[in-house]
Amino acid sequence: MTLLPALAGAAGMVFVGGSVAVSGALADAPMFTVQAARYAVACLLLVLFVRLTGRRLVRPRGTDWLWLVGVVLTGMLLFNVALVLGSRHAEPAVLGVAVACVPVLLAVAGPLLEGHGPAPRLVAAAVVVTGGAALVQGFGRADLTGLLWAVVTFACEAGFTLLAVPVLGRHGAFGVSVHACWLAAVVFAVTGLVWEGPGALGRLGADDVLAGAYLAVAVTAVAFVLWYSCVERIGSARAGLLTGVAPIAAAVAGVALGGPVPGVMVWLGVAVVAAGLALGFRAAPSGRAPASSSPPSRTGRASPDRAGISRCPGQDRADVPPPVSSGRGSMSRR
Image 1 (cartoon, rainbow, N blue to C red):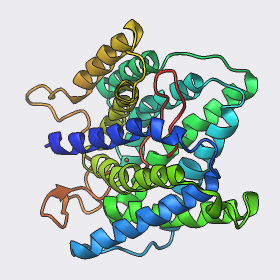
Image 2 (cartoon, rainbow, N blue to C red; image 1 turned 120 degrees about the vertical axis):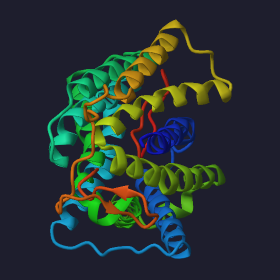
Image 3 (tube, rainbow, N blue to C red; image 1 turned 180 degrees about the vertical axis):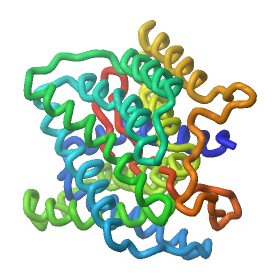
């Protein structure tokens, strides 16, 4: 059943989209230091929850380290760097549209990593969702350098999900989230120490701490697990369609915080995203397997997870969601 995993993924994207305004409060804060503290707090919360619920964390081994480090370096560290440097040469909407193109890549590359071919219907749905998300975010101007950083942003956003696919089967959503968070905390702490100095943490104000706390709890500890749980159970192709929810949530959050009511193009984009989701999640015709049916495990059977729900270890959401622009505003940071 895809309803509950899909709702989990959509909820994760709502947290990500709603974080746009919160991230704006951190514009003048030492970015790497804030991110290090954010991931450290999120990791502690996740580990505490794992212990309280009796779950078991598996230690990474062999190539697990390569995939997990890849998730951190691309989907977290380089992604944030690309947003900061790209914003100097491109309007936020340009970077937002680059992120909005990720569903198409997930619809094509995700199934290949999961062991089966892309489904044409899901690829078509991803194109529709991408178009709708672009309408919601709007289009901006950029020079050549800005366009190059937009491409890097696109690749890093896709890497956050795709590089997690090979390890989700062994570690599950909680395991991938925990390991990604503590690795990110270390990477950002070292980077912050070099670029921002050891006293950067002391320069944080009360607003910075509150914004960082929200990002740690809602956008990291909660949204990472929701997203990776969704990817693990319905596959990266279908899960990727749900990234179209993030720009809509960002637009709604902007209005709730006193921003202007979205224009006609934004509402048209919302309708297009909804059409893409309907196309991607509609039931397959009777007698045919669903287009995004989960690939079999290495043993040919689905393995039960700790809650007794059948899942496939080969299936492939982190941090996390993809950040997007708020329609005409600044980008969120994962």
